[in-house]
Length: 572
Image (cartoon, rainbow, N blue to C red):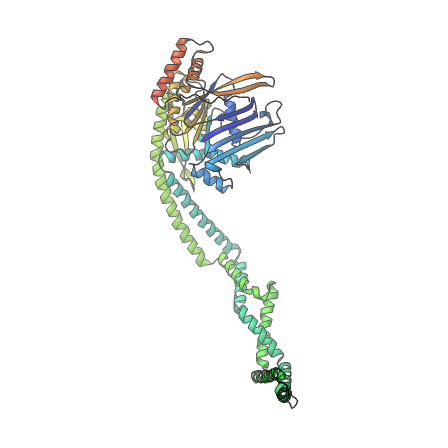
């Protein structure tokens, strides 16, 4: 719900802060006082096109800020999260728009920059504006289809149809792509298949590759290794002048010397240990020589193996260790290109999903057909009470040439505003006031299901009066039990049914004409309703009539507000 509206330097508004409440609120005042300007400012905040002409004369920048409570609107909160525009504390959502003298505008949601498109998307989830000069949501085909599904209790069924259509089309696109690939990429499939076979034939393994390289180095230098190891083994323990012989001699001399000086005993033990290590090293070298042999056949085999791996690596411009990854990629590519078997599987899956979609869509069509008749009859009855005598509304269901996410038919509201008028599309035949009243009738029917929390009506009472205005007031009062309703009106019969009433007026100042808005308490409401009934010269009889209207409205629905409101002026 809209909790507050703040306006700065917009048209004739210098500074204005409104605190709004739940229920039905009426904005009243003399013609030209600026009532609709407040709604225009709200529309600007919610993404409407910005122009420099809306700046108050002499101002450098105009600013409009709207504070919404979204704590009980999970869909809006999810949208904010998806857009990285999370709500503030306590479910607060603040939308702000500024315009400078050059016409440049900036938008913000909860203090974060937002595009005009984002403001519009958010606005459609928060406020539904019905005005005489609007391209309202009601004239949009998608909105009409949605309204019919809401009225018929088929929203969940419609979601299932949309999901089934999406699944079907996704597989259909895959099948088409696969067929196209088979027609145009046979050569590519053969090339990729050849690459896969080539890479698979290597049977490349990183650990095995390391072992093969090590073995190749050993065999390639086998003779050199034999000579080096033999020489080292001899010098350690085989020649007359070997290391072990020298260490044995040193150990013997040190043993004799240690009898003379025990301090040499540690050196003797170290010499003994060194002799043991030298013997062990010599034994290891002899064992190594026993295993080491020159194997030209094995070396030739390894030469071929290494060459094959390195040739493939150079061909694909990768390191040998990257061959397994390349093989995985080529296999995935080959699978994506597909073959006859995978194409047949896709065709079977596509047929299954199409059947499921058509079954769900046919069920939805039947539900829509029943709901269309009931909706048309219900709106037609209400139209008779809203100065549209003889008018009627029908819901046309036109089969589509091709199935869609919305079902097998298009939905269009057809209306004849008066007796003798031919049915035609709502967008083309209804005037602004008629469209507003038809929309009002539909909104009342959908009160329990409507997802938008705030409904705004401008000029909803255009061209009506008397008893019809009384009906409009009661309908708005009924809507106010479930939604926040804001209505700009010049009819006392409508305003008297409001729970809250605001008076808009213009005042002169040194800076020019500025708007002034004030909430009305019980006494002020009587005066304002009386003015609306009798003009500038008020009489006691007019005041009594106004009081009686307010009392009757209170008895008919939500009690009128009795507490004294906080004064809010157009200037501070």
